[in-house]
Image (cartoon, rainbow, N blue to C red; front, top):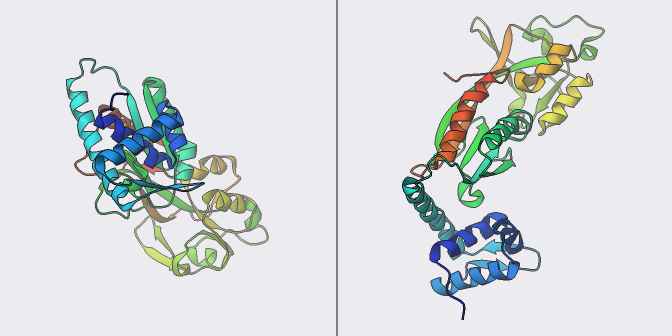
Length: 306
């Protein structure tokens, strides 16, 4: 008869199954066969006398007991990792798993490079780099930290500011042909606009460098929930748009896009980093966060927060 597995191993397997969404995917991550991962899940359910997951032909979902156990398991594994890290002799060896959720465009164009530099320096760290613009739930995603542009809609998280994003009104030269370049927000407000949705109430606040403010209600000919699509439509000359400098710095340099109102800016957005309160931060996470804090304000169009 095989020897029962230790409790931490069973919990680690269960957490990986919950994160991966399937037993086969979790088994691949753990270097196990699918039957081995299934047996470990079954052993954990037997020990706890509860069904933890519901299996169907194509999916796997946690039961109420499984959802409750997932939060407890993460906390217990974090505490064990804290103890392990504290007493390991080889403190100079950075290793383990690190899971990060980052915004799609910023994470793809700039932050992924920072993450790659981190892994080049610490090759024994296994990094999960997930790109997502929608709000996430830590208990379901199981990430170590969440980088988000804009406010973090979860008051239970610890939130730190990483940078402030400059946003400007831009247009392709083609969009300005046949008419004078707008010199004031009122002039610009009569032109066709493109907007990143949701464009609440059709309102666009702008602030002058002297501190004065105006609010436009421009005619919007196109809205989209994708910033790549917004940039493409703007480059094609469909209208004016508000875009972050970090996203269009190259196009501004080449003249493909023009800063239409150079003395006016849309409200800046903050780049935030969020993590669970009271959660042990392994050294690999602390070093990763320090690298992000140092690197993000160096991205063109992102300044250090106040």
